[in-house]
Structure formats: structure tokens, C-alpha cells
Image (cartoon, rainbow, N blue to C red; front, top):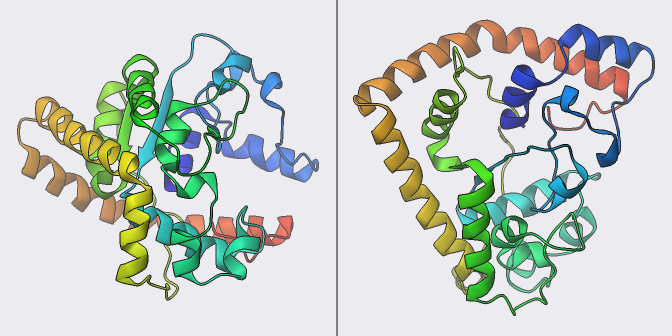
Length: 265
């Protein structure tokens, strides 16, 4: 949600334009084929390959998360949100069952599957569960090298955002933190974690490599790494203190009008 807001602020329609569409009853939904260069960007849970129906030229961007942390977060989010894609699965399973026994493609090297892409599916690569091999990882790595302008990692969020800002010549990379879960989260057993790790070895390797790459790129772009991060976080804390409450009022009002008051903002 935070990433979506950052990119929407930079490349999406203005706030007055969005409000006007909301007043007119336009929900903003459009098919992939309807996007033009005027849109400048699009976001969604799509795998590599969606560019085939989008305007050219194109470039991809994504954020990776430590694989086990990602699965735990996916379970907790899905269980507490009735409109979540996997709510039906999470609501009837324990967290151990979900991350270690549920044979959904996204729970078996899901991040590699998304980035490797598919020739006939825009959601996820559908290699049979448990059959992802080295070739799929190499395909993902090749796609990153050839078609992604950046791949960040969540636990290096600020470094990732500052690097993106530098690459795209942003005047500032300050952002409002959104959808930061405060609810009590269920935690899996060590046995389930071990099983999940065995099912996500390719994701573990991809994440490790990209985390090292984020660190390397950041050190190459910013000579005073520690000072840059410290200064940025101080400014961002002030920015959130000033504009966070304002946005919260707007987000709550929009959610009530849209009938989505119980959804993450």
C-alpha cells in the first residue's frame, strides 16, 4: 500500500481528478488493454508478461520480502480481510496448514513464479506445485536483468526508495507509511517454518541475491550511507507527523463513501 501511494503520487492522476471520478461514480477500474502512455504507470498483482497488452516501451518494478515473513503476512492479511484473494483458504486453516500444507502456487516459490512470468497467464506462473526447478529461478533473474528498473526488498525499504528516487530523478523520496498492520498476528511453529523453507528455496535464493544488490547499489549511489539514511528518516518522521493525520482523515472519509471502511488504507 505504501509503494502504491508513492508511485500514484508521482505518476497517477491528481487527487482532485480522483475525487471527481469518485463523485461521478467512476470506480477507476479499467482493463489492461485500455491503458495508454497517458496513464504513465499501472500497478497490480500481475506476473511478468503483462507488458504484452500494455503500451511500449515498458519497465517493471517490484519489492521482494523475506519468504517466510511474506507467507506469514499473507496468511494473517487473508484471514482478517473477507475480500482478500485467499480469505477462503486462510479462514478455514491454521497458519501451519496454510504455509506448509496448502498447495497454492503462490506458497511455493511465489516470488520467483511472479517474476519468471508466464506465456499464458497474467497472474502467476503455474508450474505444478513442488516442481519449480533451477530454470525457473534463472528465468526470473534474466527478467530482472533485462526488464526491471529496480527490485527492492522490504526490510531495506528506505534504501530501496532512495535508490529508486535517485534513478528516476525525484526531488524527494519522502512517503507516508500505509497499511502497517497493528493487529496481533498468528505465528507458525518451527516445524511448519522448516517445511515452508523447503518449499521456497528458490525464493530464498532470489531474496538473498536481491538484498545484496540493494545494498550494493545504495553504497554506489550514496557515499555517506549511514548519514543519508539517518537524515532521510528524520525528515520522513516529520513528514508523517505533519501529513499523516491529514491523509488519515481523507482515507477514512473515502472508505466510508466507498463502503470499504473495514479495508486497509
